[in-house]
Image 1: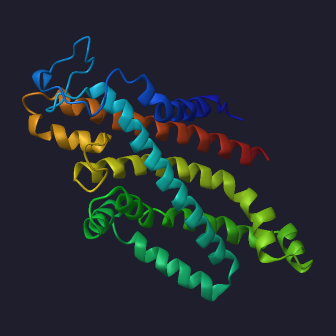
Image 2: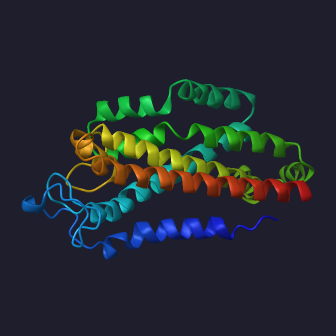
Image 3: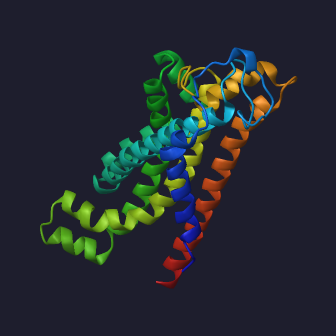
Length: 267
């Protein structure tokens, strides 16, 4: 089996950043210092300040809690909702399967980011709208994976034996379907976590996400856009935070996928 320690280290570091980032921030992330606005990196402000004189490093560290925390929440809600719908489709018979999959196909027909922007725009700019928009456009992939695995298990001997023995559908799902779903859905979850971070940042940049003065990486990009030519570092720092975090999560997801694939081939 592949060594999963790098994946665990990455997850641990990201979790620590989201939890303890605000405690190691050198300054108040919403503290305004007009005399030092648009300051270059100095000892007091290691990454400089923004247009309001706020410490960019402190805002990045505080923003990690929102960007990573909201991404975790959105991905987990989508995981739970999609898995339940996928299992319902797999276990509910042909009519239920057809209905659930047609709804899934309809949602998949729309580009998720564009659909999220439209939904957030209709509901209004708020954190709740952001969570709803990204969740409603991200559950389908979990549903398709859960359905595929569920249909494969439906003809397995131990599943059929449990059903013939009178075990309820909920018990069959709990003891036979869910353990088989965990590896595949975990890989999907890591990929969707990266997509959620991008979605949160994109909606924040468009003004539909976390509202000022709360620091979040997408809103930091929005605030810095007017200085992209004169002071490009204003956008480079939050942009790097998004790119490096998503890249790290995707690499960790690839390692996890390879490890689980190799384990399945050897079993």
